[in-house]
Length: 505
Image 1 (tube, one colour):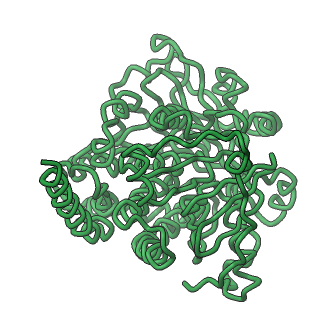
Image 2: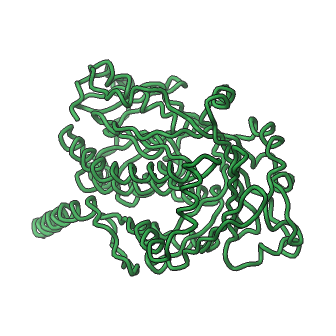
Image 3: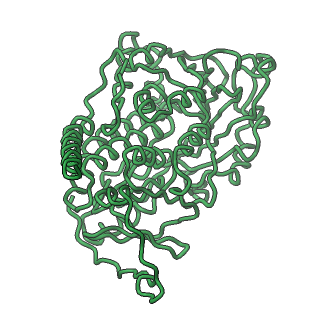
């Protein structure tokens, strides 16, 4: 993608350099000298995707800073289903055991109607064997905290709301609402569906008449989501918490615009979410709440609206409602958020690139948002660590390879999430989707499950780990294309080191 040049910003001079009393700066350390060859990466947004990229860059020795608009880190959200597609990566990062400890294995999903009549169950206990690692239900805050602990505190800057940026052949600069500016070589927009980085990038591209018309539209939203997690409960009162596997129930109504799900966690809690699927009328009514902030402030009214929704397996094994679960949940752990759906075709321009929800926002029915963002981070990190891209040509190559690898996968995930969202309702389309899934032959179901675990990426700049899956992982371009580059650099560095030792002797 060719992006017209933007005039460079005025240089910011350090007055201490010219002050008559300024002390001479100490010589650079070996690490600082080595970093001069590497790009400095600025990551805007400390969500799951941004943190994963930061961890990878730290492991790859790439200088980076993360800028987060929130003034304090809040771990909110419900449950996530993750694991099998991340096993090799998490082992490379050295956090697989901690990941395993916060998750409860899940091997089956039970689908009920609004009257808590079981429609069908889908078992996928063979998925772990296919992928070489199990799937887990875990609380989103627990995963977030695990990732956050891997980031050095001095690399995370809170209260940094970016309002604009400028880029040219020499670098990129972001401006924040606190009147600070920050400079780097690469800017990564990982700041969610309402990404300020994407909006500014698209504004510039539109002025230059290179933004596709499909990307120049308001961000559509089709759902409102209520999420939360109960306090830790007594398994004697709630027997389903005793099972070695997570109990995961999904409820979809024919005469209600809601779908809702509940899952048990390793911490004896229930994670829940309720999704309101909007039509034209309710979309307009909820537009006033449109924002990208997760928080409890807007949740109270929706909590009252959905209390009646029934759920199987309550206290003492009796049926209960979402209202019963809400009553067991601290208010500060309940959030309401608007959820959009959009796959953008523009992911980068100049020194700026997008990641995760900033470039692809999925319907929650597909359960693919967090996983896809983490896989994005691997592909992008592989090219940054291999090329050390500081020049425009190298940056363009890295971003193009990243896009070519990830866009087709994101497109498929987007289509899947839209298909799953069509299961709600009583129209012919939703009935057809549900009947298909209910009656799908065992051999075809296993084939679909096998396909879902084939993407198991690894970081090319870290020691590769054995993939124990019985279904071979799909070819990962950012791995196989960058390995030769890294091997060549390692040989050159070893040769130079040997030369330096010889000269020293």
